[in-house]
Amino acid sequence: AQRVTQPEKLLSVFKGAPVELKCNYSYSGSPELFWYVQYSRQRLQLLLRHISRESIKGFTADLNKGETSFHLKKPFAQEEDSAMYYCALAPLRNTDKLIFGTGTRLQVFP
Amino acid sequence: DTAVSQTPKYLVTQMGNDKSIKCEQNLGHDTMYWYKQDSKKFLKIMFSYNNKELIINETVPNRFSPKSPDKAHLNLHINSLELGDSAVYFCASSLAGAGTGELFFGEGSRLTVL
Image (cartoon, rainbow over all chains, first blue to last red; front, side, top):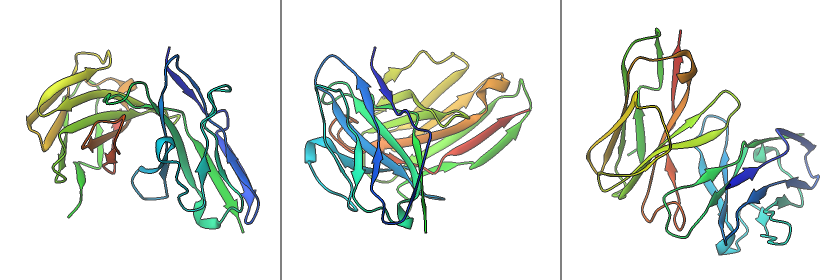
């Protein structure tokens, strides 16, 4: 079965500390993986996708097929990073089905 | 100039009633979706339409009926509302499908069934 697991419901760090939001997936093929973010009072929006190998707002995520993980990392957290983060998987390229994890709330304290 | 708009934002109703949530996108996208977010913040796809045709129906009870009058609109009608239908319903759209493109979400419609 295709599944996305985010083991932490809440992650709290202080400003300037490193952040790692964990994401593990279950899928037998080659998935497309994404991180979406929802800031307070804003819409859910795409943060980054693994295929682009990009760094957005200082965040990066590396696909590790051996560990079936796609953890989101940032070396120095900022208060404005506080938000709800969702890892998502698209099972097949060009599919219309995006499977979301349960989300992790990141709180960055000053 | 909102990209994906949903109405109403909040809906409080009694069990057994019928209600609708409307969604419109002005991005020119071909694919639209309805997602349900439960009380634990779990986001699950319900339906996907591509150019007015149903693509995905994720074993949603048939009390839920999506309707797409044109590719810019995807409405969700719910009959005989139950307590378990209480959730936030998100509409979204994409140009190239979720696998290759980006989903643009509406602000959500919070449905409370009493």
